[in-house]
Length: 335
Image 1: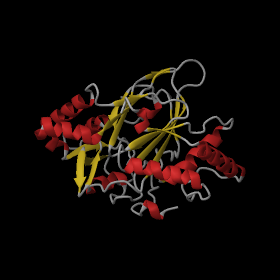
Image 2: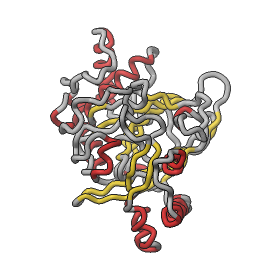
Image 3: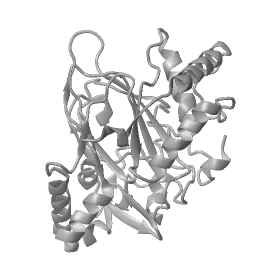
């Protein structure tokens, strides 16, 4: 794929960019703001057709896409945000990304310390190892690239699975068992501060992977969490060794106007460290979407995602007491 970007790098048709820009300006002029209750937009026929093709790629192969030339040149940054928001509503239904109820996360260096169990990696400039987020689909829109570094890295969950199946089936079996995951203070009232989720899972024909080693190791700060076993530690070491092999990941630079879309259960993502020069630094706008083409998940996911049925509204990080009533409803029936 590194040698054939046409498989995954897809230009935005000019008529789609114009349609989105016009709709975003009209929405702002009408006083609209980003809101979870915003219905799916109508009248964006060209954009909806383009979004449907991207949805097919996300649900199937290759499980990701980079949309090239998304409109980000507006003088008013709210116009870019609204265009992105409307486009996201054609792909799925947004979920919030933090206890602050962020709908569009700002992935930028705010000096966060990723070694802290209560700080988020997207607010630091540090390298982030391969991981999955708490959502079905992740959108990352590059508004400003870094001066240096900040390469995006993607790896196929199924490919990594099959390497382990061939080389270490004994350790792969460990990864199908529940691992404790630190909830990093983002649990709802009355919930345990950790959840037990397998790294790999299958439900019928549905496959999923969730791996955040920092969160797994962070669970050990909670006395109620089960202690990691030697087998689990060996399995994570083997998994990390495969992830770090040359040629396993697809590494790319996200340029201004690039929108990277990822099926979170089939693709792990990582980032190299980055540095900014003077003035405004690297900025990606992040969108988390519940997706109609998402897989069925095992019951262990329910406490973290809120629902496990394929194509259901789920996921996100929500303010205390703000669990949506829509959890479990089909995404296709919302909006």
